Image 1 (spheres, rainbow, N blue to C red):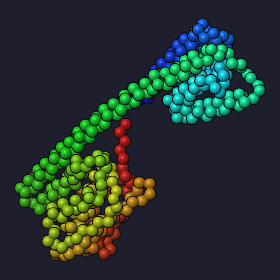
Image 2 (image 1 turned 90 degrees about the horizontal axis):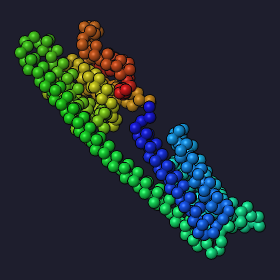
Image 3 (image 1 turned 180 degrees about the vertical axis):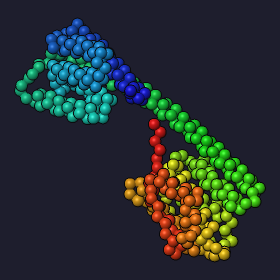
Image 4 (image 1 turned 60 degrees about the horizontal axis):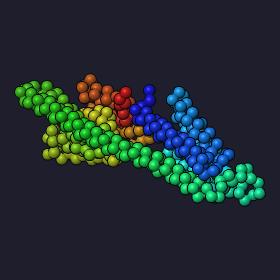
Length: 400
Protein backbone atom coordinates (compact mmCIF):
# COMPACT_ATOMS: atom_id res chain seq x y z
CA UNK A 1 0.00 0.00 0.00
CA UNK A 2 1.30 3.46 -0.92
CA UNK A 3 1.99 5.68 2.11
CA UNK A 4 -0.23 8.80 2.50
CA UNK A 5 2.66 11.18 1.80
CA UNK A 6 3.52 9.35 -1.42
CA UNK A 7 -0.12 9.38 -2.48
CA UNK A 8 -0.32 13.13 -1.80
CA UNK A 9 2.85 13.81 -3.80
CA UNK A 10 1.53 11.72 -6.68
CA UNK A 11 -1.82 13.52 -6.53
CA UNK A 12 -0.19 16.97 -6.53
CA UNK A 13 2.09 16.15 -9.47
CA UNK A 14 -0.74 14.57 -11.44
CA UNK A 15 -2.94 17.59 -10.77
CA UNK A 16 -0.22 19.99 -11.91
CA UNK A 17 0.57 17.93 -15.02
CA UNK A 18 -3.11 17.77 -16.03
CA UNK A 19 -3.54 21.49 -15.36
CA UNK A 20 -0.48 22.47 -17.42
CA UNK A 21 -1.55 20.13 -20.24
CA UNK A 22 -5.03 21.64 -20.28
CA UNK A 23 -3.69 25.18 -20.42
CA UNK A 24 -1.15 24.23 -23.08
CA UNK A 25 -3.90 22.61 -25.18
CA UNK A 26 -6.12 25.68 -24.90
CA UNK A 27 -3.22 27.99 -25.75
CA UNK A 28 -2.31 25.83 -28.72
CA UNK A 29 -5.86 25.88 -30.13
CA UNK A 30 -6.28 29.63 -29.55
CA UNK A 31 -2.80 30.33 -30.94
CA UNK A 32 -3.51 28.20 -34.00
CA UNK A 33 -6.82 29.95 -34.65
CA UNK A 34 -5.23 33.40 -34.27
CA UNK A 35 -2.35 32.47 -36.57
CA UNK A 36 -4.60 31.07 -39.27
CA UNK A 37 -7.46 33.57 -39.25
CA UNK A 38 -5.96 36.80 -37.94
CA UNK A 39 -2.22 36.75 -38.61
CA UNK A 40 -2.43 35.14 -42.04
CA UNK A 41 0.00 32.41 -41.00
CA UNK A 42 -0.77 29.27 -42.98
CA UNK A 43 0.75 25.83 -43.30
CA UNK A 44 2.94 24.10 -40.73
CA UNK A 45 2.53 26.49 -37.77
CA UNK A 46 -1.27 26.32 -37.25
CA UNK A 47 -1.23 22.62 -38.19
CA UNK A 48 1.41 21.98 -35.49
CA UNK A 49 -0.64 23.84 -32.92
CA UNK A 50 -3.82 21.87 -33.65
CA UNK A 51 -2.00 18.51 -33.79
CA UNK A 52 -0.16 19.28 -30.55
CA UNK A 53 -3.40 20.21 -28.75
CA UNK A 54 -5.11 17.00 -29.91
CA UNK A 55 -2.21 14.72 -28.92
CA UNK A 56 -1.83 16.44 -25.55
CA UNK A 57 -5.54 15.97 -24.85
CA UNK A 58 -5.31 12.26 -25.72
CA UNK A 59 -2.23 11.92 -23.48
CA UNK A 60 -4.14 13.33 -20.49
CA UNK A 61 -7.10 11.01 -21.13
CA UNK A 62 -4.72 8.04 -21.26
CA UNK A 63 -3.38 8.96 -17.79
CA UNK A 64 -6.76 8.08 -16.25
CA UNK A 65 -6.46 4.55 -17.63
CA UNK A 66 -2.83 3.54 -17.10
CA UNK A 67 -2.12 5.97 -14.15
CA UNK A 68 1.55 6.09 -15.13
CA UNK A 69 2.40 9.67 -14.28
CA UNK A 70 6.01 9.43 -15.45
CA UNK A 71 4.98 8.11 -18.87
CA UNK A 72 2.38 10.85 -19.29
CA UNK A 73 4.91 13.51 -18.27
CA UNK A 74 7.55 12.26 -20.69
CA UNK A 75 5.09 12.07 -23.58
CA UNK A 76 3.91 15.61 -22.84
CA UNK A 77 7.50 16.86 -22.67
CA UNK A 78 8.45 15.15 -25.94
CA UNK A 79 5.35 16.53 -27.68
CA UNK A 80 6.07 20.03 -26.38
CA UNK A 81 9.71 19.81 -27.42
CA UNK A 82 8.89 18.61 -30.95
CA UNK A 83 6.15 21.22 -31.35
CA UNK A 84 8.47 23.91 -30.05
CA UNK A 85 11.27 22.98 -32.46
CA UNK A 86 8.96 22.77 -35.49
CA UNK A 87 7.29 26.13 -34.83
CA UNK A 88 10.63 27.74 -33.93
CA UNK A 89 12.18 26.62 -37.23
CA UNK A 90 9.06 27.76 -39.14
CA UNK A 91 9.00 31.18 -37.47
CA UNK A 92 12.54 32.46 -37.77
CA UNK A 93 14.85 29.91 -36.16
CA UNK A 94 17.09 31.14 -33.39
CA UNK A 95 15.49 34.60 -33.62
CA UNK A 96 11.98 33.22 -33.09
CA UNK A 97 10.48 34.17 -29.73
CA UNK A 98 8.71 30.81 -29.68
CA UNK A 99 12.04 29.24 -28.72
CA UNK A 100 11.29 30.26 -25.13
CA UNK A 101 8.76 27.41 -25.01
CA UNK A 102 11.73 25.05 -24.74
CA UNK A 103 12.50 26.75 -21.43
CA UNK A 104 9.02 25.74 -20.19
CA UNK A 105 9.94 22.09 -20.95
CA UNK A 106 13.11 22.39 -18.86
CA UNK A 107 11.19 24.03 -16.01
CA UNK A 108 8.61 21.25 -16.11
CA UNK A 109 11.43 18.71 -15.89
CA UNK A 110 12.75 20.22 -12.66
CA UNK A 111 9.22 20.34 -11.25
CA UNK A 112 8.98 16.57 -11.78
CA UNK A 113 12.44 15.56 -10.49
CA UNK A 114 15.92 17.01 -10.37
CA UNK A 115 17.21 14.17 -12.57
CA UNK A 116 14.66 14.73 -15.34
CA UNK A 117 15.19 18.47 -15.11
CA UNK A 118 18.89 17.93 -15.72
CA UNK A 119 18.20 15.63 -18.66
CA UNK A 120 15.82 18.04 -20.38
CA UNK A 121 18.13 20.97 -19.68
CA UNK A 122 20.99 19.27 -21.53
CA UNK A 123 18.69 18.09 -24.34
CA UNK A 124 17.19 21.53 -24.94
CA UNK A 125 20.55 23.28 -24.72
CA UNK A 126 21.74 20.89 -27.42
CA UNK A 127 18.63 21.51 -29.54
CA UNK A 128 19.01 25.29 -29.26
CA UNK A 129 22.65 24.95 -30.33
CA UNK A 130 21.59 22.83 -33.32
CA UNK A 131 18.96 25.44 -34.27
CA UNK A 132 21.67 28.09 -34.12
CA UNK A 133 24.00 26.02 -36.33
CA UNK A 134 21.08 25.36 -38.67
CA UNK A 135 20.55 29.10 -39.11
CA UNK A 136 24.24 29.63 -39.83
CA UNK A 137 24.18 27.10 -42.66
CA UNK A 138 22.64 27.51 -46.07
CA UNK A 139 20.42 24.47 -45.54
CA UNK A 140 16.84 25.08 -44.38
CA UNK A 141 14.58 22.39 -42.99
CA UNK A 142 11.63 24.79 -42.75
CA UNK A 143 11.23 28.22 -44.24
CA UNK A 144 9.92 31.15 -42.20
CA UNK A 145 6.13 31.13 -42.74
CA UNK A 146 5.36 34.16 -40.58
CA UNK A 147 4.55 37.22 -42.73
CA UNK A 148 6.61 40.30 -41.91
CA UNK A 149 3.54 42.32 -40.93
CA UNK A 150 2.50 39.59 -38.43
CA UNK A 151 5.95 39.14 -36.85
CA UNK A 152 5.42 41.47 -33.88
CA UNK A 153 2.05 39.98 -33.02
CA UNK A 154 3.42 36.46 -33.27
CA UNK A 155 6.34 37.42 -31.01
CA UNK A 156 4.00 39.07 -28.51
CA UNK A 157 1.70 36.04 -28.30
CA UNK A 158 4.66 33.61 -28.06
CA UNK A 159 6.26 35.44 -25.15
CA UNK A 160 2.86 35.97 -23.51
CA UNK A 161 2.06 32.24 -23.64
CA UNK A 162 5.50 31.23 -22.31
CA UNK A 163 5.39 33.67 -19.41
CA UNK A 164 1.83 32.72 -18.49
CA UNK A 165 2.65 29.01 -18.45
CA UNK A 166 5.76 29.62 -16.32
CA UNK A 167 4.24 32.13 -13.91
CA UNK A 168 0.48 31.82 -14.06
CA UNK A 169 0.36 28.03 -14.08
CA UNK A 170 3.67 26.54 -12.85
CA UNK A 171 4.64 29.39 -10.52
CA UNK A 172 1.21 29.84 -8.98
CA UNK A 173 0.68 26.14 -8.33
CA UNK A 174 4.22 25.61 -7.04
CA UNK A 175 3.76 28.51 -4.62
CA UNK A 176 0.50 26.96 -3.45
CA UNK A 177 2.19 23.57 -3.06
CA UNK A 178 5.04 25.18 -1.11
CA UNK A 179 2.54 26.95 1.15
CA UNK A 180 0.69 23.70 1.80
CA UNK A 181 3.99 21.92 2.50
CA UNK A 182 5.06 24.65 4.93
CA UNK A 183 1.67 24.46 6.62
CA UNK A 184 1.93 20.67 6.88
CA UNK A 185 5.44 20.91 8.31
CA UNK A 186 4.25 23.33 10.98
CA UNK A 187 1.37 21.02 11.87
CA UNK A 188 3.72 18.02 12.04
CA UNK A 189 6.20 19.97 14.19
CA UNK A 190 3.36 20.99 16.51
CA UNK A 191 2.16 17.39 16.82
CA UNK A 192 5.69 16.13 17.48
CA UNK A 193 6.15 18.75 20.20
CA UNK A 194 2.82 17.74 21.73
CA UNK A 195 3.76 14.05 21.67
CA UNK A 196 7.17 14.80 23.19
CA UNK A 197 5.47 16.71 25.98
CA UNK A 198 3.10 13.81 26.61
CA UNK A 199 6.00 11.33 26.49
CA UNK A 200 7.92 13.41 29.03
CA UNK A 201 4.87 13.39 31.26
CA UNK A 202 4.70 9.60 30.94
CA UNK A 203 8.35 9.29 32.01
CA UNK A 204 7.67 11.69 34.88
CA UNK A 205 4.73 9.60 36.09
CA UNK A 206 6.67 6.35 35.73
CA UNK A 207 9.47 7.88 37.78
CA UNK A 208 6.98 8.98 40.45
CA UNK A 209 5.39 5.54 40.54
CA UNK A 210 8.77 3.83 40.89
CA UNK A 211 9.72 6.22 43.67
CA UNK A 212 6.43 5.42 45.39
CA UNK A 213 7.25 1.71 45.19
CA UNK A 214 10.71 2.44 46.58
CA UNK A 215 9.19 4.38 49.47
CA UNK A 216 6.75 1.55 50.20
CA UNK A 217 9.60 -0.97 50.28
CA UNK A 218 11.53 1.32 52.60
CA UNK A 219 8.56 1.74 54.95
CA UNK A 220 7.91 -1.99 54.98
CA UNK A 221 11.55 -2.78 55.74
CA UNK A 222 11.41 -0.65 58.88
CA UNK A 223 8.97 -3.10 60.45
CA UNK A 224 11.16 -6.11 59.72
CA UNK A 225 13.45 -7.37 62.48
CA UNK A 226 15.24 -10.03 60.46
CA UNK A 227 18.35 -8.32 59.03
CA UNK A 228 18.64 -10.74 56.11
CA UNK A 229 15.09 -10.07 54.95
CA UNK A 230 15.60 -6.37 55.55
CA UNK A 231 18.65 -6.50 53.28
CA UNK A 232 16.58 -8.17 50.57
CA UNK A 233 14.03 -5.35 50.78
CA UNK A 234 16.84 -2.78 50.56
CA UNK A 235 18.26 -4.50 47.48
CA UNK A 236 14.87 -4.45 45.77
CA UNK A 237 14.48 -0.80 46.66
CA UNK A 238 17.83 0.07 45.06
CA UNK A 239 16.92 -1.83 41.89
CA UNK A 240 13.70 0.13 41.61
CA UNK A 241 15.56 3.41 42.10
CA UNK A 242 18.10 2.48 39.40
CA UNK A 243 15.17 2.33 36.96
CA UNK A 244 13.53 5.48 38.34
CA UNK A 245 16.70 7.49 37.68
CA UNK A 246 16.47 6.58 33.97
CA UNK A 247 12.94 7.98 33.68
CA UNK A 248 13.90 11.02 35.73
CA UNK A 249 16.71 11.81 33.29
CA UNK A 250 14.47 11.25 30.28
CA UNK A 251 11.95 13.68 31.75
CA UNK A 252 14.63 16.34 32.16
CA UNK A 253 16.10 15.99 28.66
CA UNK A 254 15.29 18.49 25.90
CA UNK A 255 16.70 16.43 23.05
CA UNK A 256 16.30 12.69 22.52
CA UNK A 257 13.64 10.93 24.57
CA UNK A 258 14.84 7.48 23.56
CA UNK A 259 18.51 7.63 24.61
CA UNK A 260 20.26 8.29 27.90
CA UNK A 261 23.62 9.97 28.45
CA UNK A 262 25.48 7.12 30.15
CA UNK A 263 28.11 8.97 32.17
CA UNK A 264 25.81 11.24 34.22
CA UNK A 265 23.42 8.33 34.75
CA UNK A 266 26.13 6.06 36.17
CA UNK A 267 27.46 8.87 38.36
CA UNK A 268 24.01 9.66 39.75
CA UNK A 269 23.28 5.98 40.36
CA UNK A 270 26.55 5.46 42.24
CA UNK A 271 26.00 8.61 44.31
CA UNK A 272 22.61 7.24 45.33
CA UNK A 273 24.11 3.84 46.28
CA UNK A 274 26.80 5.50 48.38
CA UNK A 275 24.12 7.53 50.22
CA UNK A 276 21.77 4.57 50.53
CA UNK A 277 24.37 2.25 52.05
CA UNK A 278 25.89 5.08 54.14
CA UNK A 279 29.47 4.39 53.18
CA UNK A 280 30.76 7.96 52.82
CA UNK A 281 32.30 7.73 56.24
CA UNK A 282 34.32 4.69 55.13
CA UNK A 283 36.49 6.80 52.84
CA UNK A 284 35.55 4.84 49.73
CA UNK A 285 36.10 6.72 46.49
CA UNK A 286 34.51 6.28 43.11
CA UNK A 287 36.21 6.82 39.77
CA UNK A 288 34.60 6.93 36.33
CA UNK A 289 36.14 6.50 32.90
CA UNK A 290 33.13 6.76 30.62
CA UNK A 291 33.01 8.44 27.20
CA UNK A 292 30.27 10.88 26.24
CA UNK A 293 27.92 8.31 24.75
CA UNK A 294 24.16 7.86 24.81
CA UNK A 295 22.48 4.48 24.75
CA UNK A 296 18.89 3.34 24.33
CA UNK A 297 16.63 3.00 27.34
CA UNK A 298 16.42 -0.75 26.64
CA UNK A 299 20.19 -0.90 27.15
CA UNK A 300 20.61 1.52 30.04
CA UNK A 301 18.03 -0.05 32.38
CA UNK A 302 19.60 -3.55 32.46
CA UNK A 303 23.05 -1.95 32.47
CA UNK A 304 22.03 0.17 35.46
CA UNK A 305 20.78 -2.87 37.38
CA UNK A 306 24.07 -4.70 36.66
CA UNK A 307 26.04 -1.72 37.99
CA UNK A 308 23.69 -1.53 40.98
CA UNK A 309 24.36 -5.17 41.89
CA UNK A 310 28.12 -5.07 41.45
CA UNK A 311 28.65 -1.74 43.20
CA UNK A 312 26.34 -2.78 46.06
CA UNK A 313 28.32 -5.99 46.54
CA UNK A 314 31.56 -4.02 46.55
CA UNK A 315 30.30 -1.50 49.10
CA UNK A 316 28.96 -4.24 51.38
CA UNK A 317 31.74 -6.83 51.21
CA UNK A 318 34.94 -5.45 49.63
CA UNK A 319 35.93 -3.04 52.40
CA UNK A 320 35.36 -4.62 55.83
CA UNK A 321 36.25 -2.93 59.11
CA UNK A 322 36.00 0.61 57.67
CA UNK A 323 38.75 -0.10 55.21
CA UNK A 324 39.31 2.66 52.62
CA UNK A 325 39.37 1.90 48.94
CA UNK A 326 38.22 2.75 45.44
CA UNK A 327 35.58 1.53 42.99
CA UNK A 328 36.26 2.24 39.34
CA UNK A 329 33.73 1.98 36.52
CA UNK A 330 34.92 2.10 32.95
CA UNK A 331 33.02 1.81 29.68
CA UNK A 332 34.84 1.40 26.42
CA UNK A 333 33.16 1.85 23.07
CA UNK A 334 33.98 -0.77 20.46
CA UNK A 335 33.11 -1.28 16.80
CA UNK A 336 29.63 -2.06 15.45
CA UNK A 337 27.65 -0.98 18.50
CA UNK A 338 29.57 -3.15 20.97
CA UNK A 339 30.77 -1.97 24.37
CA UNK A 340 32.84 -3.19 27.31
CA UNK A 341 31.88 -2.44 30.90
CA UNK A 342 34.59 -2.81 33.50
CA UNK A 343 33.84 -2.60 37.24
CA UNK A 344 36.66 -3.13 39.71
CA UNK A 345 37.50 -2.46 43.33
CA UNK A 346 40.72 -2.75 45.32
CA UNK A 347 39.05 -4.46 48.25
CA UNK A 348 39.55 -7.87 49.76
CA UNK A 349 37.80 -9.71 46.93
CA UNK A 350 35.49 -12.74 47.13
CA UNK A 351 36.88 -15.87 48.70
CA UNK A 352 35.77 -19.17 47.16
CA UNK A 353 33.48 -19.88 50.11
CA UNK A 354 31.62 -16.59 49.66
CA UNK A 355 31.44 -17.08 45.88
CA UNK A 356 29.90 -20.54 46.27
CA UNK A 357 27.46 -19.24 48.84
CA UNK A 358 26.42 -16.31 46.70
CA UNK A 359 26.35 -18.18 43.40
CA UNK A 360 22.60 -18.69 43.57
CA UNK A 361 21.80 -15.26 45.00
CA UNK A 362 19.31 -13.02 43.21
CA UNK A 363 21.98 -10.38 42.58
CA UNK A 364 24.35 -12.72 40.73
CA UNK A 365 21.51 -14.29 38.81
CA UNK A 366 20.38 -10.83 37.76
CA UNK A 367 23.87 -9.94 36.59
CA UNK A 368 24.15 -13.08 34.47
CA UNK A 369 20.62 -12.88 33.06
CA UNK A 370 20.84 -9.19 32.22
CA UNK A 371 24.22 -9.71 30.56
CA UNK A 372 22.61 -12.30 28.30
CA UNK A 373 19.76 -9.87 27.67
CA UNK A 374 22.37 -7.38 26.43
CA UNK A 375 23.75 -10.10 24.12
CA UNK A 376 27.00 -10.09 26.07
CA UNK A 377 29.27 -12.17 28.23
CA UNK A 378 30.79 -11.69 31.65
CA UNK A 379 34.12 -12.47 33.27
CA UNK A 380 34.94 -12.10 36.97
CA UNK A 381 38.29 -12.27 38.70
CA UNK A 382 39.29 -11.87 42.35
CA UNK A 383 42.91 -10.76 42.06
CA UNK A 384 43.68 -7.55 43.95
CA UNK A 385 40.00 -6.99 44.51
CA UNK A 386 36.96 -8.02 42.50
CA UNK A 387 36.83 -7.27 38.79
CA UNK A 388 33.94 -7.60 36.37
CA UNK A 389 34.40 -7.37 32.64
CA UNK A 390 31.14 -7.37 30.71
CA UNK A 391 30.97 -7.14 26.93
CA UNK A 392 27.55 -6.12 25.65
CA UNK A 393 25.68 -4.64 22.70
CA UNK A 394 23.23 -1.76 22.48
CA UNK A 395 19.67 -3.04 22.37
CA UNK A 396 17.24 -1.11 20.20
CA UNK A 397 13.72 -2.45 20.30
CA UNK A 398 11.81 -1.94 17.03
CA UNK A 399 8.11 -1.18 17.12
CA UNK A 400 6.30 -2.99 14.32
